Length: 575
Image (cartoon, rainbow, N blue to C red; front, side):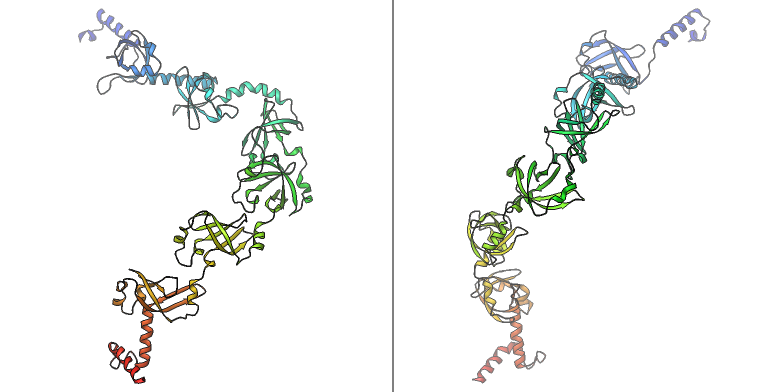
């Protein structure tokens, strides 16, 4: 230790000089990129020598291979690494070659962004909203939005994958380390000068012949002009009629004449119009009359109908509901083709809303009116089941091309209409009665049970409180299921209507097949409602007995247990 205290000693001065010169060369600091020289290679690791470190940093050999540095894995080669920790908890030096590459790559991206210079990259994969681009020089990954891939819509970008090409850096997030690039900006910069020369050729009022429909948007339609310029026709400039989307009028690939209405040399844009090539038809819309037949031309077919042209510039929608009287959910694509001339009736003209409504079915006879004349309500006709769902049948009446609706409740007079429905299948022949015809709603309702004898007629001569005899069909915890003699309908007697005394109101007293007298508690013939009760019959009998022998309060004079004997004596005295 004396050597450090006595600096006047020549040996001490020489040692101090050598020590200071060595420390000035070595600047070791965590978070910095340092160069390491490979001095040992094993199967899994590469050992580096770095001046100033007390131990050799170790790098995973797979990390270097994934970075494309396989050729540099040689003794004596120098590799840049990020010094993460001079000494970790195990006393080892912690470095990373991949992080060093990313940091160096980011520095290059920042430099290119600040200088507004393009970079070389390649599209490596697709992702949500766009693609991932790899920086060729550093391997850094960047985001390419779908809108920045090209200056025109591309259905397929496979030809661009893994191809080295230029990209413009349009956004850098230094905090998150994210980069956003654009291929479209590079393409547009090449075309900008050429586009300016092309636009010089056009002026307001020019007519462009045969422009091709290139694509749609919610605000208009794009046309390609001579493969040198794309122009926009705004939604309001497509037709004098009101439309909600360009696809209602145009098809991709069609060719149309356009009129130039705006030229913007600064934005390098040309605006055009289709409707201004013809006069406004709504100025003489009075020439058209409601409920009159006109010939229209089919110009566009859609799933929900067809767009037709009354005259050039006057387009109207023929909705699928106005195609046919009898066919439901029919497609215009199956009935017509583009260019067909068909007859239609104008059903509405709204000049303020610039709307005309038309109908094709009104040019034909209404089959529902014909049916009404041939088969008025109450007619019994032959029919065939043509369709079926969970609650009804659809039947075709004789040779009429109309489907009639038959609800399951109109199959039988009993309360099990859904069970009855299961007995029918497509192709079954049945007689039905026409119950209702609504031409305006295109609806015909028929019934099968109405062709049969109504078992409810049994109650035509019956009255409330009248006694009838029924047969017990079955029992359950809720009561009895019974059927009156000479009647085909079943009724339910509730448990509470079996007896006056609660102890006697037991359905289990019957096993089925017994005959029992009951009283009609409720009878509503118009609603086809009947309520039967054994309890009511007991009450009526009791009331009659009390009326004959005294009041219920005088229990001493009329014990209920001797009621049958007293009634018998009364009958004997009469004899």
